[in-house]
Image (cartoon, rainbow over all chains, first blue to last red; front, side, top):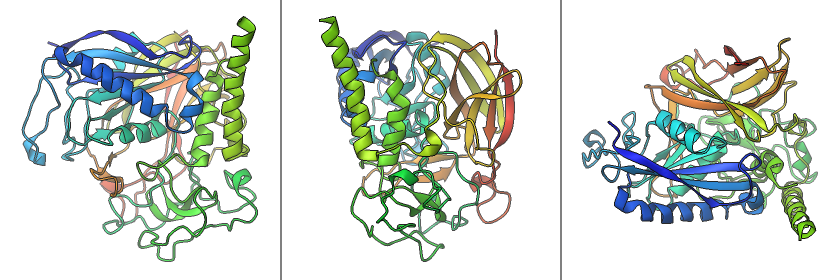
Length: 288
Length: 175
C-alpha cells in the first residue's frame, strides 16, 4: 500500500507550451498533507534559486518548472542508526532514506517510482528533482536529483543536474580525498566523452581551444606530484580559461577548463565551458 | 501586440546567445555540429542491477529533444552514452551521460568548505532514462560504456572507467 498519494501538478514557472520548452519538475517527498503549503513555498524557493544561477538566469524564456504534489503518510526520511542516525523510519511515498550503502549523507529514494509519477504528471519532462522534507544534510544524483532541506542542499541538486541533464563530468581531482586516494595518480590516455574535461593538452586541438586566449599558458597548471592533489593556487585571474591539471577523480593527466567550477566545488558558478554546454543544449527551447 | 510579443521572444534568444558569446565566445568545435531538433520523442526507461541493463518501457511523447552530441569522431572516447541508430547502423543522435551504472556514489559535504568526494557503492541497482528523437529512420537505441580498470591499485570496487567505450546493449525501437 502506498504511503501517501499524488495530488496533482502545478506549473510554477511558465515559459510556454511544454512541447517546446525545457521542463524541470520538482516532486515532494516526506511532506504530510498538512505540510503541502510548505512544499509549495520550498518549490518556489528552489525555482527562484535555479533561475538565478548562470546561465539559467538568461535562459528563463526556455524553462518551465512544475511542482508535483505528493503527500506522505509521515514526515521526513529514514535515518538509520547504523550510520549514527536517529533511527527514524517515517512512512513516505518514495521511501527516501539516508545511509544508502552505509553512507550517512547519501540520501536516495525509490527513483523508479519517482520517474513513473513524473512521466505520468509531466510527460515532456527533461529533469526531475526530489525535495525531501528533512533538515539533515544529504542528497544524491542519478535520474532524479535528490536533496534535503538542509542549508545549501539545493547546491547538490544543481551540481547533479549538471551531470544528468547536460552530461558534465566532475572536475575534482580526487576520489575519496586527496590524502586517502590510492590509484588516482594518473588518468588513462582515453579521451573522456564529457565536454568539460580532456586529456588533450595541445592548444590547437583541445576541446575548448577557441576559448583559450593566446596569452594564457597551456597547460595553465601542472601538478608537480601526481601522488597527491595539486596544492598550488591559481596562477591566473578568476575566469581565465585554460588547461588546469587534475579532474575526473585523477591528480594528473587530465585537464579542466577553469581553476574552479560548480562541477568541482559546490557554491561556485559553472565555469564558462560548462555554461556554454548548457546554453547550447537549451537554446532550441527558447521562443523563436 | 503580436509583433511586440514576437520581438520580445527573439530578444530573449538573442540575449542568451549574446551573453553566452561574451562569456564563452565560440562553442568548442567538437560540440558545434548538432542534429536537427525534433518535437517528437521516445522516452526509454531502463533498469540496472550491477552490470545487467534492462529496458523497462518506451513512451512516445510530443516534446523537444535537446540537440545531439557529436555523432562522428568519438570512437576512442571513454564514458557512457546512448545512441539512436538507423537500419544501416548509422548514428543519428547521441547523448553523453554521466554513467548511471557506476559502482560508486557522490557524497556531499555538510560544510561548503569541504569538498565533494566519492565512496564505493557496491549495491548498484536503479533506473535511468534516455530520450531520443522519434524519427522514421531510427531503428535501434544502443548503450555504450567504458570498461573499468582491471589492473593497478584502483581496481575492483574502486575501479573507474578507463578504456574506450563499447556497445553494451542494443534495443529495438517499437514502431
